[in-house]
Length: 299
Image (cartoon, rainbow, N blue to C red; front, top):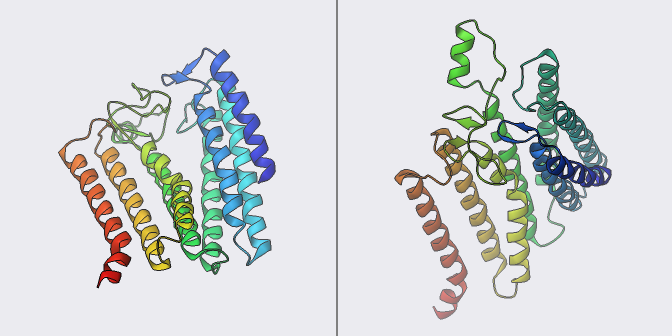
């Protein structure tokens, strides 16, 4: 995994250079932009799992296998991303030619293997008794759970869209099978840098937010650890649970928003209501938990 991290750093440089010097576009974005986004994600993923799994002291051989296998699978992903960028072709859902279909099939298979291996690592992680602060260890475990949910949301994009199903039922052929945009074809106007659809639903948003739950929950756990003199263990454990549930609620909200075909920055009353309710409940819960000690002392 360390070697993969170094490789990912080189991949970032390569993809960034491609974005700068290669004028070609795919689906309205620079042909190397998807590679750049994946490269940056890999650079965050590798040290995160290395750090998190350093707290796992049981089943060392199995955990070594998990890390090595994930690194190997993601290295294949890098190779496929580079191949399609060089060819100037979409990476995901692309079944336009036999070569594209083969590449997409390999990518789908490797991602499934990657997901299953991460589940194995998560199960072992859950069995590990705290070797550090309990609340901090809980934040790492819940963060990895959120990351797995984020990974899993990616599979929603692989289903054929209604328009694609109509073409298949009519006996036609498709250039793409699956999509990340809901309510329109991929490649429309997008949010700056991220490329998420600015006019329709986009499943990549929930996918992205969920994956990075690992870093967010770890940060929450670390901040609470630095404040352990102010809060009891029970308070900090409750706050970690509250942060995880609140974050999961956010992931669920933006997932439903995307499935309804609604752009992130064009929320309707239902979406705004869910965000407001989530914020109010989270703030109230945190306030009650943080003030519990003071209330008990006064009583």
